[in-house]
Amino acid sequence: MRELRERVAQLATSDVTVLISGETGTGKELVANLLHTNGAGSAGSFVVVGCSTIPASLAESELLAT
Image (tube, rainbow, N blue to C red; front, side):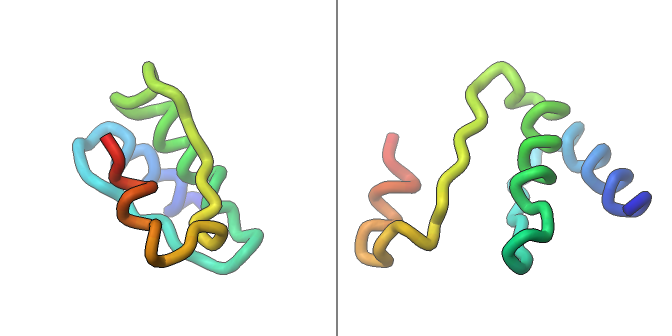
């Protein structure tokens, strides 16, 4: 847990894209929220998207819409 907290703190201050993956119930949303709250994007909204509910045929247009 200590290593994870340190890594989240490092990532939050950098300008990189982060992919968070893991099994159900492992805290992915918590990590994403921490990254958002402590990072440069904290002025914007934090939006949770359940990717498993989006059909593969619509994923690109739904997630990358401008």
